[in-house]
Image 1: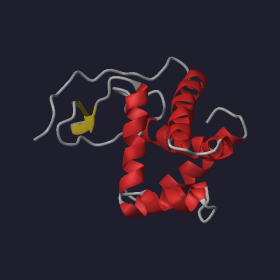
Image 2: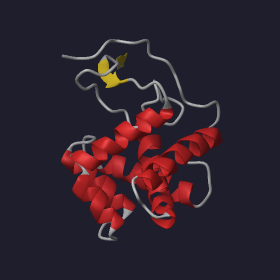
Image 3: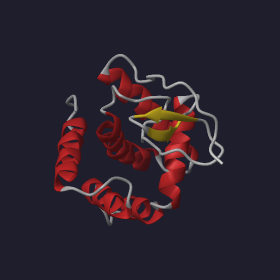
Length: 156
């Protein structure tokens, strides 16, 4: 049984800088709550922000769903491009849901990054092969370009 259908509402902040700050802060707090050190959480944030930027373009984030998580059972949902996606009341709820997905089906890839066995690009590649997004060289190249710009302090 799917959850109730709610209105699709753009929740991305007005500027990319604000999106990076608000989403990065929510993500950082969630990672610290999970027991990651300050340094480890700070190293993971750009990797995940890059994924979200690639998924939503930052400006096309709806219903606080930064990772474009597809609709699950018994959860509020929205329609976007004819597809069902989960809808969250707050960005903190959306971040927690995204991390829950990573900690489930993508646990090995996340672990491998945390212990230094995968680079952020390797993490994204492995996630695509695991089914998060259809694999393509174009997607991998775009991820690398966004990540490079984000970690150099440039607007991705």
